[in-house]
Image (cartoon, rainbow, N blue to C red):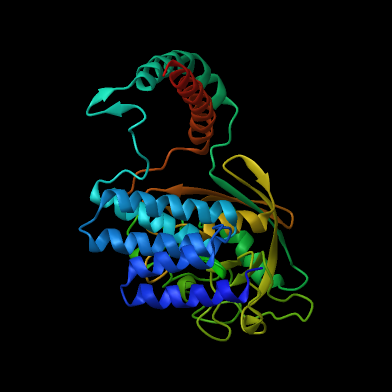
Length: 371
């Protein structure tokens, strides 16, 4: 836990940054946290460096130093979500300016390959040759989904809501629908079967959806007007991992639903939104983890000021129903309309990247010995 002196220093540094006195803020941070052991110190230093870079006409060196500071903040505290979001935002900004977050000086100097660069090129060629044989075999056994969430449904608590959800899933109406609203530390919302399909214009996602069955609400002959009565149960309340029905008021549930994020317990939604399931397990790019952790991973994607995904769009490929268990398969798709690489490709690339990284480190050590 930070000392009172350090916390006071942070507060003053934040004020200096707001006043655009970035160098003074950096000097103060060096004084109050001499060992640079606190994540927030690195994060504030990164913010000051990034602002100073912009003020200096998009100075590449300062931008890269800001990236390094954010990375140090995450090393100190991997759960610092503010640092993670700021780092992702800064990297996107640098990409737009044509500035690489990581330098290439180790491999190229004034356009010519260094000794390490030459060795790395040779290693890369070897990896390509190995990959031509290894990758096809590797991909054959991998999952095609980026994320999977396994949900236990609660028919005893919300029988009408569960029946409607199952019918939408079985009949494929959820296939291709997006999570149109993503709020870190709160929830993921999706399931608009009318206006939320990724393959079409989903700019109006969140404005539609209807019940699979007629429960006496809406026009009996017009399914798109059907809604589900609220089903509140004192034993099933909002908590991390909960699946609940979105609505626009009392008894207006349709097809839209939301999943509660890891660090959220929105009890103010109890008796306003029907709770009808819980995420119990899942996968994230082939790695087994709890369903709540998968929700948390998705919640950290980039969004705009309206909480709409920007860099990738979480899209339901299908929901499999087995009794009262729903298995939701999700891919993160490029918003331009092109599919992102499948999880299989990404996993293979990840493993090969690890081999490449090890090879480059080996090349680096060889280069150092040669000096």
